[in-house]
Image (cartoon, rainbow, N blue to C red):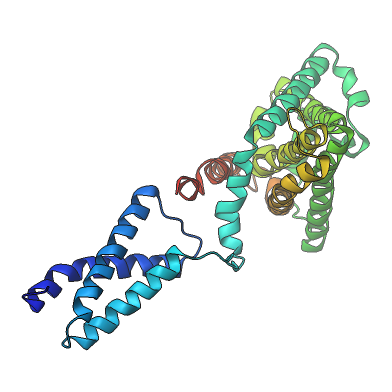
Length: 334
């Protein structure tokens, strides 16, 4: 029995306020999940408020307090005993900052395997061009024909050409780059249906091209030009293509089903959302890389200092690492 109603309300109000604050947070962000300690505290506040309501209800006084407590208890009861699935409104920002990096980290071993395959290809291409400089004509595809000559001559020509291309030409070039790179990434994923063999070959060959270009320009003493040319778009483009290989290896793993007793349909259904998320993220990354390559990477000294281009590319790389490595970790631990 309550002897001093005012003292009782004054003592209990902080607990009621805490419960109300927790309910407001849960109802405002329906994706928020409570940690075990928070759940225990929430249940304690619910029990304490329900006990207070039982005491206040026995008195005729304080009708406002009784209605307030009844509202709190009803809201808390609804949260505790909620069983229906909640319909979440899609948030592009939340998807980009949370869903995409979480999906990437769930399959990070496939990413590192893609990195290893690409690096092996780069080492192979680098050694091949170092041992036989004439081999680059046989290794490089036709689209890289402009890079088959002497790197020093090409650099000198690029730095002499001060005429800025037209906006229409650069827009067309940017669109062509986006389509080509997105196509390569989708192929890297789709080739997972060949039990990963096609994905491995594609990653290896892209690595070979990268190794040939890098060694060719470094050997010619054009390392600064190489970094200023490749880093602004390559710091996003190359990880995106490797992530395409990551998706392909995920698909191959589901197809092979090592150590899994579930059926093929169940395995494919399980990874389908993650594959969709990765490919959508890759497409966004390559759209950005295409814009940067067309409107930034193609400008060289004296128009655009190499130090500015290198700093820009390194900044992009750091931000990408923070996005994929850190974003969404708090939600994973909740």
